[in-house]
Amino acid sequence: MENRQELQSLLDRTAAVCRSLTGDGRQATYIPELATVDPTLFAVSAVTLDGAVLSSGDTEARFSMQSMSKVMSLAFALERLGYGEVFSHVGMEPSSEPFNSIMKLEMTSAKPLNPFINSGSIVMAGLLAERLGSGVIKDMLDFASRMTGNKGGLVVNERVYMSESSTADRNRALAYFMHSSGTLSFDVEKSLDLYFRLCSIEVGTADLAVMGATLANAGKNPVTGERITSLDTSYTVLGIMSVCGLYDESGEFAVKAGIPAKSGVSGGIVCAVPGRMGLAVFSPPLDKGGNSVAGMETVSRLSRELKLRGI
Ligand code: GLU
Image (tube, rainbow, N blue to C red; front, side, top):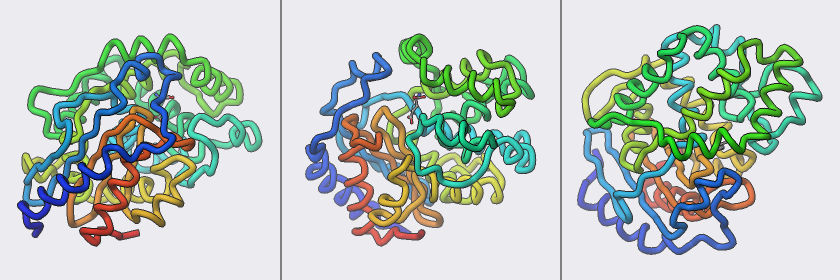
């Protein structure tokens, strides 16, 4: 069991050092609403498997999940539709291409390599929208709220959603290309609409750390005690996070931190350390790969100090 005082003091020390380590990082601007976020914000949270929620930095900061929502969406899809159906539409291999790349799709015309790159996640959204109908976003928000233990209930940030859906040429190109080749067999605009809404769900680092802790705790939320996913679902999601979580820097992150994680272009990283804890960090400036510079350094330091390495 983790010592809470020592863990809090480690979070405080790490936050003090890492919040300014943004190097040449730049926050994302291709979604206009993300460019309005204060780039100096920094927050880190840890949630232990006995239910302690510890945070440091700008703990009130709220931001959109962006690609971190893909962790929750995969867990939800596995629970509702099952492993066979999910992986008949997407693969489970790293891509070694940028998250919004169209290249591999064109070269192979096969299904998207994994559910964490944009093409795979748009296909997953289309599958969920088709199978579960118009109530799907409400169901997914409810699932996400239970997985993060958020009492008030998570919501979509409408400004981010509008900003994202009105400037999404690249994601539209991906979706229409996949539709033309039969990889995306669902309604394109409905697939994209659900995808944009999921990316725009607003969270704080404590929410994300509870989500990570739920996966680290074999699918049971350690704060609320509620079972959210099966053991098998948690293992599957952790496996995909291990190899596909940080875009085409997943290998580098595995070497530096060695724990299952997923980043998003808002500047967050959510981590799940099986049998130990959930972690989350937020700092908007990103490196060339689209990962938070201070976030990667924070997780690497915490992993080293707490001996969290597990992959
Ligand atoms: N909504 C973002 C996009 O589709 C998500 C990207 C990310 O966080 O990786 O471009």
